[in-house]
Amino acid sequence: MRTPFSKLPYVAMLFAVLLTSCSSDDTSTDDSTDDTSEGTVNSDYTVGLLKKTDEASDGYTLFAPIQSTTTYLINNCGEEVYEWPSDYTPGHSVYLLDNGYILRPGDAGNTIFNTGGQGGIIEMINSDGEVVWDYTISSSTECQHHDLEYMDNGNILLIVWDKKTSAEAAAAGRTDYISQLWSEKIIEIKPDLVSGTTEVVWEWDAWDHVVQDENEDASNYGDVANSPGLIDINYDYNTQDEQDWFHFNGIDYNEALDQILVSSRSYSEFYIIDHSTTTAEAASHEGGTSGKGGDIIYRWGNPEAYDMGDSSDQKLFSQHNAHWIESEYVDGGMVVVFNNLAGSYYGSDYSTVNVIDTEVSGDGSYSLVDGLYGPTDFQWTYKADTPTDMYSSFISGATRLPNGNTLICVGSTGTFIEVDYNGDTVWQYVNPVGLTGIADQYESTNLNFVFRAERYDTDFEGLSDYDLTPEGTIESGSDYDCE
Image 1 (cartoon, one colour):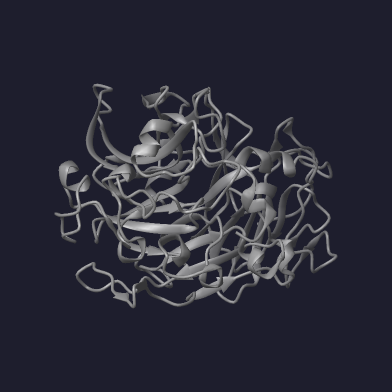
Image 2: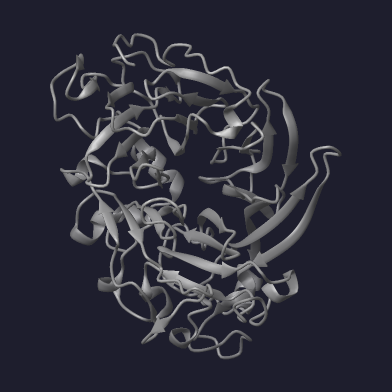
């Protein structure tokens, strides 16, 4: 990696921004009142709604501030329309389901996996704020973290840290000593909301798909460059936070392809694996629609991680929220990602949002050309007019919207930006909820981090039973007109 931030563990990044106040990404106008050409513009505000135009995608934005136990839903005028309480701070994502429940992992306070993104308990919370189902996966050896994926059949995919001892790491060919190594699992669970029981129905374990070329006596010894479906356990990405070896930070599921996508911050790649396998096949290198078992069937972002390039070939840098764009949207079927340290390639601190065309074939397969998966570059890129105006070294995400716009969460500043396909800002909001509570307007925020923000259309089925009457802004002191 080419930036000091990439060598900092996640928790250190939180302290690195401790004294940084939240700043606006788009302050191109000095108007602080309603303007008919620009819509609502509050460029002198520190929190809440900064900008709204008619080009914004109409809907409601859901977010769970990392320092709060409350989840919020706001309209496009920055007014709160609903909130859900919890006993836990988020761990970290939150989603609104078709049945009206929110699905929210919480930080269960695991003392072994005590770092950014830790979760451990998953809750469904109804419109009355009642927990209708929960599931805990938090122990001395395992802990759910960062993200989850709700599937159309009602099952849930979880990403789970899986602790390995130094002896286990050495047996797998890890060559540098470390007291413990956190591998990754994907666990699919089937909740029964009536009985409250939960069944594990499928698993994938990264430990079954590692390779290395340094210890000839280990069973996974092989040629890394000729094993694109496997993970090099000795890829040297980080010298300060090595126990969190792989650091998955996002998961997505494509039902049409029956494939799972996961994002690895540590390796600066995202991976696609075959979900059509049985658990036994997922632990092997054969089986499933792909015929490759649980091996990686597509990877992109950093060819150096599997000895097929060097630092000049890297495209992703500690990215977050890699996921498929809905098929009916602009660039549908492609992958969108928040590229946190994109500016590090140019020696600068800025982030970008990128879209990647995986060039998937009709049968769900991917082509290797000279040992590499295409494409050679991005399909679409957004960066701020002044690139350093949009920067988050950790967390964050981006989602393509039905009208072709993109909703971006700049996590370290708690800023939500909606941009059109040309990159023009059409909506902007700053989370007022931080470590010390809710900031008043014109006050600086204090650690108002947000992992991700989700936008739901006004006719979304899960909102049908809610009273969405605006209740005013979350913060006090906002005074503006907005329709």
